[in-house]
Image 1 (cartoon, helix red, strand yellow):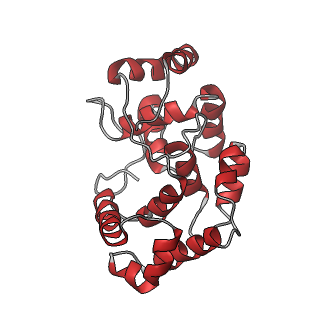
Image 2: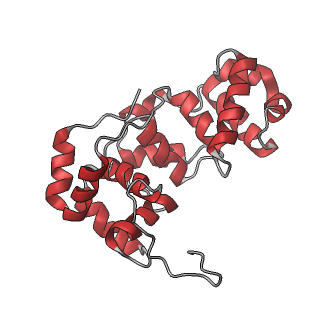
Image 3: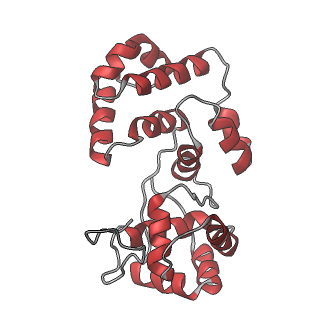
Length: 217
C-alpha cells in the first residue's frame, strides 16, 4: 500500500507556494510505501534507527523468517538474545522486547493511538523506550497516513528546503513558517522535499555552507 493523497492536496500546495508547485509538476505523483500494521511499524522503525535501509530490510527479513509472524507473543518467546542475533544491537532488542511486553500485558494501548490527535499520538508514542519524536512522526506518516506531519528533526527535509528555497540554514523559526504554509498537507510536502533531497530533479543543489574540503555541512 502507498501513502494516499489526492489532487485537492496538490492543488492546495501549488496555490500556497509557487516553487513547491514547480517541484510537484516536475516530479509528478509519488508512490511511497506504507505499513498499516501499527505494531510492526513501531518495531520496524526501532530497528531502522541509525542504520541503512538495506541493513534494516535484512534484519526485518531475518525476523520474519524466524518468527513467522512478528507480534508480541512471537517476540517475547524469541527473547532478547535471539533478536540480537538477527543483527540489531542489544539495546534495540531490549526496546522491542519491552514494547512487546507492554502490549501483551495491556500497559500500552496501541490501538488507542489511532484515535488520538497528531500531537497526542506523538506524546503517547515517545513514552515507549526507543521511540523519539522523529520516530513517532515517521510512524504517524508512514503507518497511520496522517496528512500534516512535518519533522524538523528530519535532515533530508531540511536539505530539501535548502535546495528548493536556496536557504543556507533551516532555523526552527524558518521551518515553522513553512509548516504554516503547507498545513494541513505537510506530509505531502514532505514527500516532495524528500524526493528533491534524494536527487529527483537534476541540477538542484544544496545551499548549505561548505566545509573545508568542499563538503556540505
